[in-house]
Length: 498
Image (cartoon, rainbow, N blue to C red; front, side, top):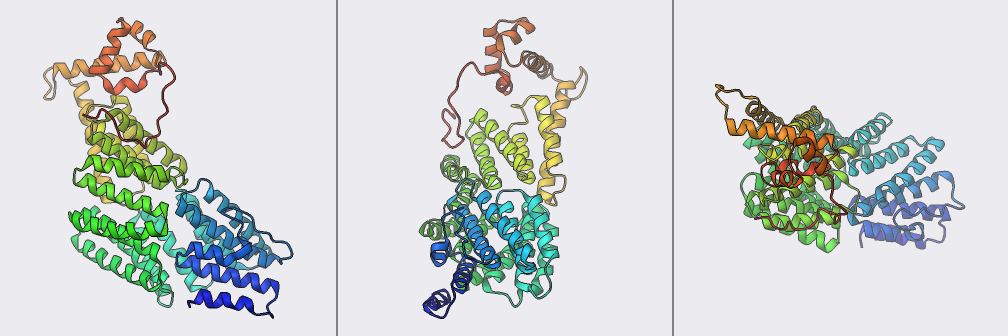
């Protein structure tokens, strides 16, 4: 019998008041959530649980007890929504947690206010709204005293996660180092979280700064995280760290080992029916396949991941998966589909506040298509967007990629503006670039209407269509649609790629 079972046995005690029974259920549910046993937590709540996003029946409960019920319902809604990738689950979780927060505030329960803020910040984090998450977590930390060491540790480590996802690795490392004293007397689950986040920072710095010693340290930290999660019986987070370790191994060129760890993670998550985390493992598998140039296999598995992530509202994860799909389609020569999906990834990431993901999508557009398939004006526009989106990154690799993309923009500009006698001048390339500029201007003035653009250019519609299909395929997206087209989901295998 585990601790949760023994606690629930106390419900048989006839001396318990109704409110004490409710609080007991909430405490047991909280313990189970903390170790990733979300389905068991749902059972522990009993009749208090009204389904994902459902508001519990709070009649005859005092304000403080009602707040606790709302808190656990909100936390569990967020986790189950993420696990099952359910649309609007995070918004529903936020509503429940906000109501709990207000009740705690009215009762003057400051530590519970901070706990509710932590859980709210986690919902914003899942949605990719990193700035909002950062603000809420900072407020939670500010309101906590030194007696709440474990909650301070949880908030600090989650705060570091935001810095990792936004490319501020040195800032993340500083936060994690400050958290170490708080973790010494914490549970294995918290210790596992600290080691896992330290490993992520070291992994990113190892590749970004070319520090093989960091990679070795990251492997040690991932191994420590897995050990602590095993001690805590937190199978989900064990699988997460197996996935993250696989990511590092493939980056080190050890793809065979990476597949082995991904197999282990997949078995655990499939048994737990955790669709959200399983989609992230599939995304990592696709990255390994890309590194191995197994593009068709990568295409199939990333499509599966995207189908799952499209339903869940966790935009940053979806955007990252779409970037991989866009790269895969480019390698399979499905160029127009690749450009479309990378633009889509960039837009949805930026709209949700996941600016670093949007910046990486912009870089991918330039890297895969900037040499010849983008119009010069669009190439320049995408580069400016990438530069703005990644302005705060501390990732040396991202900075290097941004500089390389700047080189692509400059080379394209030098070719189009070269003059006879210049070192880079080529008459065919200059004529082609000038023709493209004129066609682009005509299409924009004609609002994409092909017949009107052709008239402005002094050619037939058929002639302009042929030019767009052959010499200036990068401008075809500027055409207005001829009629109703089949909707595009971004989740299918590309056709006619050869």
